[in-house]
Length: 298
Image 1 (cartoon, one colour):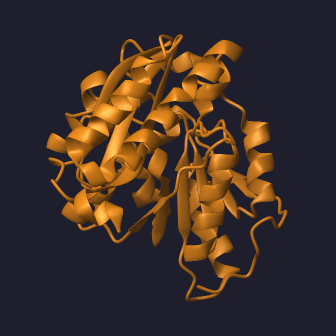
Image 2 (cartoon, one colour):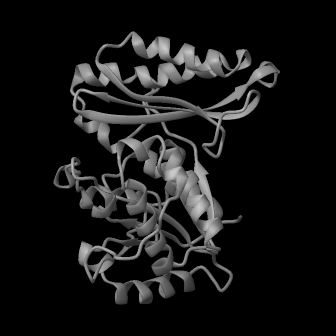
């Protein structure tokens, strides 16, 4: 799709915080891109980093204007998770949005998104929300899908971009869009990594220097699993588990091999290897695409 702004164009995004402002602003920014414009949307919880920047650039490949939400969603935090600890860096977030040519930022307070308090009706993530992260974080995906559905309704994008680092979230959003006939194309963008392989995450800022060094074991384990793909599922899991066992600072939550839709892993073909572990007090997740069996050796 042709675009009117190249990635890296510095603009001052329009910022709105209320629903009535949003409606007017969406019309204004869409009007600047012509009657055939298709809004590209990137939902975030702020604390933006280079990984988010890559999502913004990817969004512009699929549509303009580019709209970003910055909202720390309380309904996706469990009782044992510290909502107040989540970083809030709005000024820096807006600067990053400007560097990536974002047209509009929606940064509402909680009472704007949930004007009547916690929702009594929400989106049930179904069986796909009860595995992996759903086991460790009960209710998390109910909160995620409910707020994404609300944001889709408020912003009415033609396309929405999500990072593959949160792979289960991406799969569930796609399932929600398909099951509920939402007119949104959902695009997954590749995980952005540090030079040593660590997946970029807002949580990385909580890692002490020794924890930061230990955290690399997640991506090393994934690479080992991917390399073992031609030998089949058991070899993939064994290779990754062997690497993880060698790092005592990483407390493994789960290591799982699934098909691309998070069902049972096939004997051969495309699959996904997912891992979650605590390093110090910080819980990290990562994943990688794997090709299993003879196809992986081609």
